Amino acid sequence: MKNILLIGGSYGNGLAIAKELQYENKVFIASRTNDIIAEMNVTHIPFDALTDTLDTTKLPDIIHGFVYCPGSINLRPFRGLKIETFEADMQINFISMVKVIQSILPNLNAAEQSSIVLFSSVAASMGMPFHTSVAAAKGAIEGFAKALAAEYAPKIRVNVIAPSLTDTPLAEKFLSNDEKKEKSALRHPLKRVGSTEDMAQMASFLLSDKSSWISGQIFHVDGGMSTLLVNG
Image (cartoon, rainbow, N blue to C red; front, side):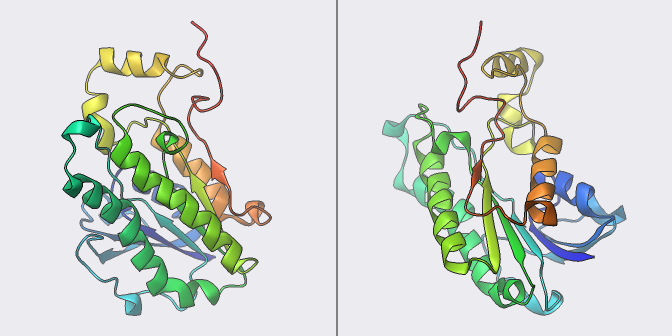
């Protein structure tokens, strides 16, 4: 049984990942709330990625898998963005993630081979209007992941999931009614937006031994948006 640490596993992608993993792994969720996960087979650690230092004494000595889920979606015209928005997006998406990884590095190194899974965005590889702030933060994650994967191979594998729009609480304002959902679906070659289960299944694969020869990769779980033209 593997020890898996999720940062932000109380809703959205993190919650779906926890549900996918909870019965065959020992799952630790570090998050602000535990209302939804209280009845799940997981261990909760109170933690705010923006303000707290992770208490590693509450974690096992060996961590086999790590997933960082917190993120942001700030879609605004560049001319109206304040520098504070860029700083905030970089903080939640990237800086806080780096701090956590540094704090658990001994635990990851203690495993025969461990796996880190991070979340980027299709916007990091595609030029999309109004995405300058979030694309910059997610692009930092992709560059960091490849460098970290090279530095810690073969001991620690590092991979990134880059979704398109996914039906999570974070994206609620973009999918708040049927018309918005339909328009968003039609933008994707596979004619639907992403689900948290899509992300959970990919994360589960990347955490498992089935992906033991995969590292330094960016997986575009995006309905074909990043590589395929929309037909019709």
